[in-house]
Amino acid sequence: MKNIVILISGRGSNMEAIVEACAREQWPARVAAVVSNKADAAGLRYAADRGIATAVLDHKNFASREDFDAELATVVDGFAPDAVVLAGFMRILTEGFVRYFEGRMLNVHPSLLPAFTGLHTHQRAIDAGCKVAGATVHFVTPALDHGPIVAQAVVPVLPGDTAEALSARVLVQEHLMYPQAVRWLVEGRLALDAQGRVTQTAGAPQVHWGA
Image 1 (tube, rainbow, N blue to C red):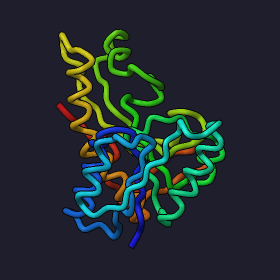
Image 2: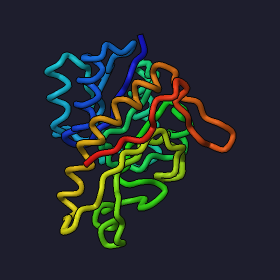
Image 3: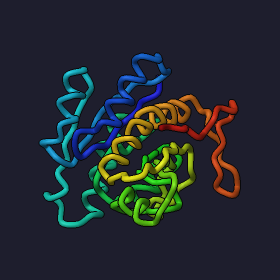
Image 4: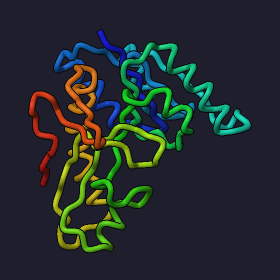
């Protein structure tokens, strides 16, 4: 049985989707813990109500980003993770933390990477005149929002779209795509080639098309 540790900073809607898919589909894994840098993160209550261990580590209590990440690594390691999943964890992680968990840590970013790294992705896609937008699940590397791409979800940018409307449609697809990608990771179904390209070894589609 593989252990999944999920890091959140707020509601953690992708965390909820992963927890529910893991139970419904009977993965050979369990969500062992949900860890947050904010004590008031709503996702902590969701996890606790389902018997999942939780932990809080407030970044404001640490003198440096390096000190926080070192302690965070210790906390996460305490749950013997086979997969570390970022689900709305609003911290830029240090290279040391990323290197320690590299190859077993996933993130979802709300754009079709490598386009629109960083923040305000949906408005930037609209402003650029993009005809499609979406989200990307990728392995986490020290380069922010640049890790090897595991899967992408694509939705059309509709006439008159707002950032909020586009974000809501993309999030629906994230809730389908991200659990599937996490399952692939814990089942050992992802392969990374020398060029940094990820394939699903059973040939499953790595693109999700949404409305």
